[in-house]
Length: 272
Image (cartoon, rainbow, N blue to C red; front, side, top):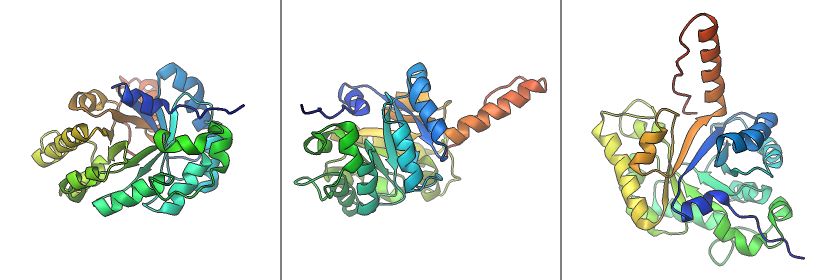
């Protein structure tokens, strides 16, 4: 009996017109990943968990373990790879990532490489060898992977925004993801999650939302809990609420502030 490939719940939410809220994992602690992907996902409604290999601490072996402990999660587990490299993109997909976020995609040529690396032929050049992915997600993983694994290039520089029409024209991407800190830097601003009074920053976000919507591509963004509703109202439909490091830091500060008689107001969690 053929086991059908498991549905990508995040992509199903998008196809139904909904939005997804996620958690960023920057540490290598598999227990934290298992906890977040289990009871906390069900309790809090976490739609996706992203394991960060770019600025996070995980190498491939640690990533593999974190994918194992989140295999049965109701959250869709994605990976941000270190760079736009076909080899590492293929490896994280073979290990069982249900989506790949690829940093610093600034040109249509770079976007074509991302799309090609994420898809099996005839849509791309991903090499066949889904050792773990097929074992975990279903016997018919290969014929269904192209439609069920999220391909997500990052649009996070002024150059990428200027080239966005050409990047989107490449096709084959399910979402784009904004890194606001790098976008800020390339606009001559301090790295931050938001610049509410800066026209260049806000115009860039508006452009990304408008053009992706017209192309049928989801706009995603790195955020903090206090910015989530603003980003949803702006039209972003993939919004990272916090990170494991940010949540730990915020919770620790709040606990000690309350313990010493303070009000315990929560600061924005770290954008990392």
